[in-house]
Length: 142
Image (cartoon, rainbow, N blue to C red; front, top):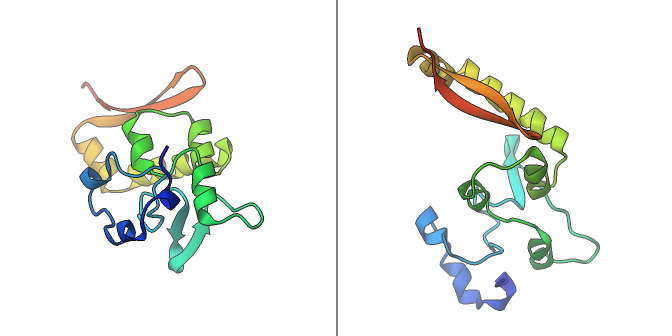
């Protein structure tokens, strides 16, 4: 695994701008300001939430090395994950991930996206696969 501290400082002036540029790039990803990076989140009113705290005098490069994943898009590219896996990536509990998932699904149902699904005779189907809950958009037959 290559590490951000092994690279020259000049590299950091060439921050990636697209997913295509990011694919195959440095891992752990050194660009913590990227909106897809899992190290921190910008939340309401421009507050910063650190998802993975440092331990003692540890610097950010050490934290990045300790994180199981640094890019949300890399995680998504590998397909479905359990709530527990996502909790590990985000530094949250499985239950908190389930709560966030429910809030997201409810927002979809209450917005234009949910109304669009209704207009197209589609619905969100929830089903279990082992210990995981999966969601699929289905066509509703009349």
